[in-house]
Image (cartoon, rainbow, N blue to C red; front, top):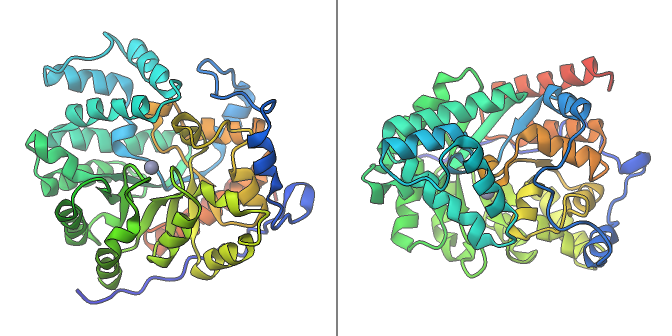
Length: 398
Ligand SMILES: [Zn+2]
């Protein structure tokens, strides 16, 4: 396949980045180290019954948002999951949607990645038919649209459905049909699970290539990070890049900061999470690392609540997103797994404002950077940027 050229990812001119209270706080990295290491700081997990000011939540819903990082098998509606489990004759951990929500809530707050991941066994088994995959994709797009999203990218590892008898191409076709049924501009990122053998990872990459330009917009390596470095697949990723496949790689979530820089060297235009990069701030390695990201035009898809639930951060209040933003890193905030984390994009926005001290203008800036970094076509990205600017104007931010 002939190489394709993509415009470089860059921050839009309209978004002038400044640190809190106006001063650009480039390189001020001590915030993260101070808050995380201080035992008096921050509750561990966001409370399950956390009360959010309805006015803040309403404003967060009205804020036009760009969603770049959400797993389709982590974002089902509880009622849909229950119906799908029943239809397949599979046991559900609770008899109703509220009970199921409480079950996921307990997993999210167990403080264990293993417990958090248990939910995926349930969702993948429930979704394993073309009809169910189509429905879940459609509902995800509609949920995002109703939550104020103006552009969305969803991701999943289609090979996960093969052991359940669903061909991976058939799975991709069904999910793309579901996404296309919603008026929300969206695309699908094909993930490979990094703990799987090379042959299956190669098959996932070939699947992504077959569908590139027909609704599939990028390739990602997901799954357990520690012990499964992306560098193992350097040649495959190079092949994908040469074929014009945009890359986003999970990195710097459960493993160290240098994995983020490795992902940049491997050609990733975006990084899923990347939060361990904050460990370098305030050290001599920070300058070259930030410069490498800037030169490559790399954008971080940060998922604060998910990081708290998997143990990658202690709290939203002390999350490294603050230090990375102050250091001038291009980034935005995302849900990762709405069902597992009992989350919406608006709730994440409200938490960043009320717990992490971000302004609405900061969030709009992040949205513009996310729109610029999206893998969707330029016309969709431009429309999303215009929606963000119109939203800011009506909210009195201009
Ligand atoms: Zn993820």
